[in-house]
Length: 352
Image 1 (cartoon, rainbow, N blue to C red):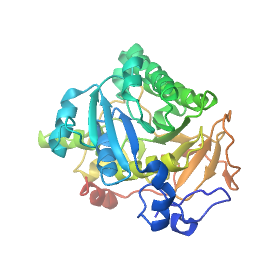
Image 2: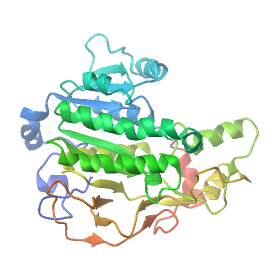
Image 3: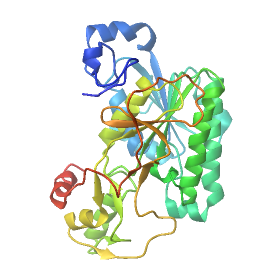
């Protein structure tokens, strides 16, 4: 059960508070509470044809109060794959609609956001070597695209926009991280401009998602090659798609403007993951690659809320709750209390 932060303090569950939380089992009281406003909810996902977008669409289709989910993405082939998987094309009144569009196109975004209540901004250029080589393309998507999402959301009167960010934006050393760090600041600052609430959810690479190391290594193994670990001391956080979706739903429900939500996650060594998959060779570190994942700096204004941390912005444009248990921590995959063993990784790999 999700732990939630209420307006008085910590530690109470959704059932104890008697409120509706995204993803919780419905109660009569929660249905009555949201019936008037949320029964016709419309949600748009930028970059919604990727692994996270598919998981979010699957979740929202199980909720009667979600009237429409709009997948906004420039990849028509992935649209085709989603339509095939879901068994609908979006042209005959179904609850899912697909719009071919790019976050670089402000006017296309504004058209797509007509009557939309909530936005989840997943679109980004994420491959570190690609962003290192094509810096301006990273800027155009990750920075200018963020500006377009913000402007269009405010213009269309969107209630809340949750942007997905990354560990690479913390103590950034590569073009991807630097563009996402600026994007984060833009979303936080956007709370000064209107009634739309903007907030962030931060985590690292989702285990088993498209483009992540697990499917890549599995392909290598199929072709008779060992996985290549670029540095033997490299660490990462472990997060599944389900946990990422859960954190996004929490932010959709509770964000007041400017916060960054970070789930608590176990760490692992890349060498242990490779051993769990059958062994490895050692290669060279890639341009812009970090040895560990940073989620929170010690200088951040950080609070603990159940199985997550909440970081407040340095400049608060919204009146946020004063929370009781501020933490002075540096949340890094190298310095973590919870570590996955090789045996635990083997068990988790069975689920991916």
